[in-house]
Image 1: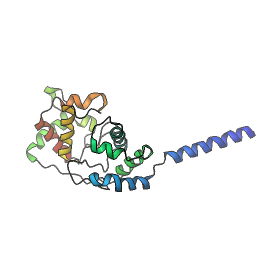
Image 2: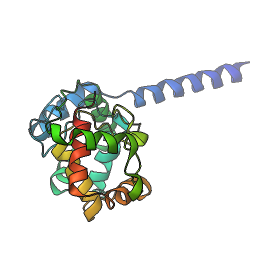
Image 3: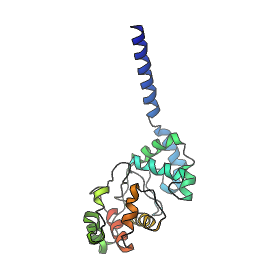
Image 4: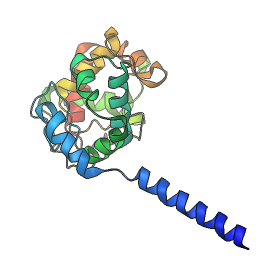
Length: 203
Protein backbone atom coordinates (compact mmCIF):
# COMPACT_ATOMS: atom_id res chain seq x y z
CA UNK A 1 0.00 0.00 0.00
CA UNK A 2 2.81 2.39 0.91
CA UNK A 3 4.57 1.63 -2.38
CA UNK A 4 1.39 2.29 -4.33
CA UNK A 5 0.80 5.58 -2.51
CA UNK A 6 4.39 6.65 -3.14
CA UNK A 7 4.14 5.75 -6.83
CA UNK A 8 0.85 7.63 -7.18
CA UNK A 9 2.36 10.70 -5.49
CA UNK A 10 5.35 10.63 -7.84
CA UNK A 11 3.11 10.32 -10.90
CA UNK A 12 0.92 13.21 -9.78
CA UNK A 13 3.95 15.37 -9.01
CA UNK A 14 5.48 14.56 -12.37
CA UNK A 15 2.23 15.42 -14.14
CA UNK A 16 2.03 18.71 -12.26
CA UNK A 17 5.59 19.63 -13.20
CA UNK A 18 4.95 18.72 -16.82
CA UNK A 19 1.82 20.91 -16.89
CA UNK A 20 3.83 23.80 -15.43
CA UNK A 21 6.52 23.36 -18.06
CA UNK A 22 3.95 23.42 -20.86
CA UNK A 23 2.16 26.55 -19.62
CA UNK A 24 3.29 29.40 -21.87
CA UNK A 25 4.72 32.46 -20.17
CA UNK A 26 2.59 35.05 -21.94
CA UNK A 27 3.94 37.89 -19.81
CA UNK A 28 7.45 37.15 -21.05
CA UNK A 29 6.11 36.66 -24.58
CA UNK A 30 4.54 40.13 -24.43
CA UNK A 31 7.91 41.52 -23.36
CA UNK A 32 9.59 39.83 -26.35
CA UNK A 33 6.91 41.25 -28.65
CA UNK A 34 7.44 44.74 -27.27
CA UNK A 35 11.22 44.63 -27.59
CA UNK A 36 12.29 42.20 -30.32
CA UNK A 37 9.30 42.09 -32.67
CA UNK A 38 7.77 45.54 -32.30
CA UNK A 39 9.82 47.39 -34.94
CA UNK A 40 8.54 45.25 -37.83
CA UNK A 41 5.30 43.63 -36.66
CA UNK A 42 4.09 46.09 -33.96
CA UNK A 43 3.52 44.95 -30.40
CA UNK A 44 0.03 43.70 -31.25
CA UNK A 45 1.04 42.00 -34.50
CA UNK A 46 -0.65 44.51 -36.79
CA UNK A 47 2.28 45.58 -38.92
CA UNK A 48 1.83 49.01 -40.53
CA UNK A 49 4.01 48.12 -43.54
CA UNK A 50 3.23 45.62 -46.34
CA UNK A 51 6.84 44.39 -46.31
CA UNK A 52 6.19 42.87 -42.88
CA UNK A 53 3.21 40.55 -42.45
CA UNK A 54 0.40 41.02 -40.00
CA UNK A 55 0.75 38.19 -37.49
CA UNK A 56 -2.06 39.11 -35.08
CA UNK A 57 -4.59 36.29 -34.99
CA UNK A 58 -2.30 33.96 -36.93
CA UNK A 59 -2.40 30.23 -36.20
CA UNK A 60 0.03 29.72 -33.27
CA UNK A 61 1.43 26.41 -34.57
CA UNK A 62 2.22 28.06 -37.88
CA UNK A 63 3.91 31.04 -36.23
CA UNK A 64 6.01 28.76 -34.03
CA UNK A 65 7.04 26.69 -37.05
CA UNK A 66 8.14 29.78 -38.98
CA UNK A 67 10.09 31.18 -36.02
CA UNK A 68 11.96 27.91 -35.57
CA UNK A 69 12.71 27.69 -39.28
CA UNK A 70 13.95 31.27 -39.45
CA UNK A 71 16.13 30.56 -36.44
CA UNK A 72 17.56 27.33 -37.88
CA UNK A 73 18.01 28.76 -41.38
CA UNK A 74 15.47 26.44 -43.00
CA UNK A 75 13.59 29.56 -44.05
CA UNK A 76 15.96 32.18 -45.40
CA UNK A 77 15.68 35.83 -44.38
CA UNK A 78 18.63 37.68 -42.86
CA UNK A 79 16.52 40.06 -40.77
CA UNK A 80 14.16 37.40 -39.43
CA UNK A 81 17.00 34.97 -38.75
CA UNK A 82 18.69 37.63 -36.63
CA UNK A 83 15.46 38.49 -34.80
CA UNK A 84 14.49 34.85 -34.22
CA UNK A 85 17.93 34.14 -32.79
CA UNK A 86 17.07 36.58 -30.00
CA UNK A 87 14.10 34.47 -28.90
CA UNK A 88 14.92 31.56 -26.60
CA UNK A 89 13.76 28.17 -27.88
CA UNK A 90 11.66 27.76 -24.75
CA UNK A 91 9.80 31.03 -25.48
CA UNK A 92 8.90 30.46 -29.14
CA UNK A 93 5.57 28.74 -28.45
CA UNK A 94 4.60 31.44 -25.96
CA UNK A 95 5.42 34.24 -28.42
CA UNK A 96 3.38 32.45 -31.08
CA UNK A 97 0.43 32.08 -28.72
CA UNK A 98 0.71 35.72 -27.65
CA UNK A 99 0.46 36.99 -31.23
CA UNK A 100 -2.27 34.47 -32.05
CA UNK A 101 -4.33 35.94 -29.21
CA UNK A 102 -4.14 39.47 -30.61
CA UNK A 103 -6.95 40.94 -32.72
CA UNK A 104 -6.16 41.26 -36.41
CA UNK A 105 -6.80 44.63 -38.02
CA UNK A 106 -7.40 43.33 -41.55
CA UNK A 107 -6.48 44.94 -44.82
CA UNK A 108 -9.18 45.62 -47.42
CA UNK A 109 -9.36 44.47 -51.01
CA UNK A 110 -7.97 47.39 -53.01
CA UNK A 111 -8.29 46.46 -56.68
CA UNK A 112 -11.95 45.99 -57.59
CA UNK A 113 -11.00 45.27 -61.20
CA UNK A 114 -9.44 41.92 -60.27
CA UNK A 115 -11.92 40.76 -57.62
CA UNK A 116 -13.72 38.40 -59.99
CA UNK A 117 -10.49 36.69 -61.07
CA UNK A 118 -9.22 36.52 -57.50
CA UNK A 119 -12.47 35.01 -56.26
CA UNK A 120 -12.44 32.41 -59.04
CA UNK A 121 -8.88 31.31 -58.21
CA UNK A 122 -9.62 31.27 -54.49
CA UNK A 123 -12.78 29.19 -54.81
CA UNK A 124 -12.09 27.00 -57.83
CA UNK A 125 -8.40 27.30 -58.72
CA UNK A 126 -7.25 27.38 -62.34
CA UNK A 127 -8.38 24.08 -63.81
CA UNK A 128 -6.51 24.22 -67.11
CA UNK A 129 -3.21 24.79 -65.27
CA UNK A 130 -3.79 22.29 -62.50
CA UNK A 131 -3.90 24.99 -59.82
CA UNK A 132 -6.15 23.90 -56.93
CA UNK A 133 -8.54 26.19 -55.10
CA UNK A 134 -6.79 28.21 -52.39
CA UNK A 135 -9.79 27.60 -50.15
CA UNK A 136 -9.04 23.88 -50.11
CA UNK A 137 -6.07 24.44 -47.78
CA UNK A 138 -6.53 27.93 -46.37
CA UNK A 139 -10.25 27.57 -45.76
CA UNK A 140 -13.23 29.30 -47.41
CA UNK A 141 -12.71 32.45 -45.34
CA UNK A 142 -8.91 32.29 -45.39
CA UNK A 143 -8.62 31.34 -41.70
CA UNK A 144 -6.06 28.62 -42.46
CA UNK A 145 -5.51 25.24 -40.87
CA UNK A 146 -3.18 24.62 -37.91
CA UNK A 147 0.57 24.20 -38.45
CA UNK A 148 0.76 23.84 -42.22
CA UNK A 149 -1.57 26.41 -43.76
CA UNK A 150 -1.54 29.99 -42.44
CA UNK A 151 -4.35 32.42 -42.12
CA UNK A 152 -4.11 34.81 -45.07
CA UNK A 153 -7.43 36.62 -44.81
CA UNK A 154 -6.81 40.28 -44.05
CA UNK A 155 -3.12 40.01 -44.89
CA UNK A 156 -1.36 42.64 -46.98
CA UNK A 157 -1.89 41.67 -50.62
CA UNK A 158 1.64 42.82 -51.38
CA UNK A 159 3.09 40.45 -48.79
CA UNK A 160 1.04 37.46 -49.98
CA UNK A 161 2.04 38.15 -53.59
CA UNK A 162 5.69 38.35 -52.59
CA UNK A 163 5.53 34.96 -50.85
CA UNK A 164 3.94 33.36 -53.90
CA UNK A 165 6.71 34.81 -56.07
CA UNK A 166 9.36 33.53 -53.65
CA UNK A 167 7.88 30.05 -53.77
CA UNK A 168 7.94 30.21 -57.57
CA UNK A 169 11.41 31.71 -57.92
CA UNK A 170 13.18 29.60 -55.27
CA UNK A 171 13.42 32.24 -52.57
CA UNK A 172 11.31 30.19 -50.19
CA UNK A 173 11.20 26.42 -49.84
CA UNK A 174 9.79 25.55 -46.42
CA UNK A 175 6.34 24.50 -47.66
CA UNK A 176 5.15 20.95 -46.83
CA UNK A 177 5.73 18.52 -49.71
CA UNK A 178 6.69 21.42 -52.04
CA UNK A 179 2.98 22.12 -52.39
CA UNK A 180 3.19 25.91 -52.66
CA UNK A 181 6.22 25.73 -54.92
CA UNK A 182 4.39 23.51 -57.39
CA UNK A 183 1.31 25.74 -57.34
CA UNK A 184 3.20 29.02 -57.68
CA UNK A 185 5.15 27.72 -60.69
CA UNK A 186 1.87 27.56 -62.61
CA UNK A 187 0.69 31.08 -61.80
CA UNK A 188 1.35 34.40 -63.49
CA UNK A 189 2.15 37.54 -61.51
CA UNK A 190 -1.27 38.93 -62.45
CA UNK A 191 -3.01 35.84 -61.07
CA UNK A 192 -0.95 36.03 -57.89
CA UNK A 193 -1.83 39.68 -57.37
CA UNK A 194 -5.53 39.06 -58.03
CA UNK A 195 -5.92 36.20 -55.57
CA UNK A 196 -3.75 37.94 -52.96
CA UNK A 197 -5.90 41.05 -53.13
CA UNK A 198 -9.06 38.97 -52.89
CA UNK A 199 -7.68 37.14 -49.84
CA UNK A 200 -6.97 40.46 -48.15
CA UNK A 201 -10.68 41.23 -48.20
CA UNK A 202 -11.83 37.90 -46.78
CA UNK A 203 -13.30 37.92 -43.27
